[in-house]
Image 1: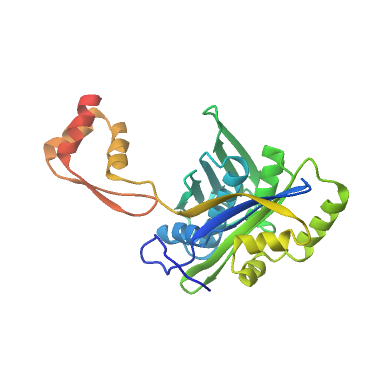
Image 2: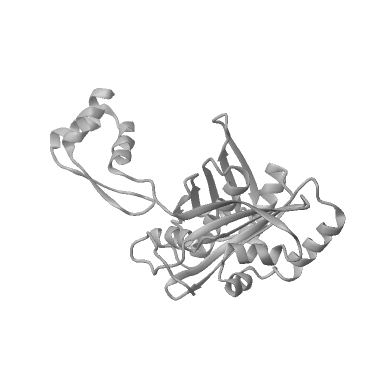
Length: 295
């Protein structure tokens, strides 16, 4: 497998992540395919997730990017998976610059699917409002099935989608997925052919990713075999946290004035760790004076 640079420290290097969008020339289908290895692995490794939790978090990261590219490429989309029995929560944040980060909260152990497992997708609208939808996540169909249900029920988008990944002893080594959206111009013959192709040749997402190396253009060429299509857009993707000293300091603005004053008087630095990437920050007590004056 070809390898390239990865921005997440301490992780084996992989090819750059990328998404490609095409539309078939007959106007029947819009297809999005992506390689998300660096994104999924960066999210999972930053949260030190393992086992079933790691598998779900990796697929959630890929799926959230796929929803963003389908519905709101220029806006942020957040995917939230709540485990069966309300035990544990996984979060994926996909931003319009292509960066994605994640969060794992599993105090009771692994996050699992089953009765009560829910997928919530939230995306920004041009008006500034938030559109959100919630669907159940079954053990049988997992994140892939929940994504298709969400797109159909909350977005009225008829589609076939799939996300998946491969891993070895070190973690995720290949991740990706695709979405085939049925457009208004689609008629029965091409729909029947596409359905049969996806049902038979693309049923095993991990196998397909492995055979094609997760290359989005190769995925599209196989999905659209025998059909003419035009590439309409490409998107660079990667794992990326949003934390910075300025953002950490701004987050302290919610602390009460009395507590801030006590911290300044103690004259000891604050040590804060980012929940998303575990990056440590040292905030000098004197830096809090501006927050006290603002409050």
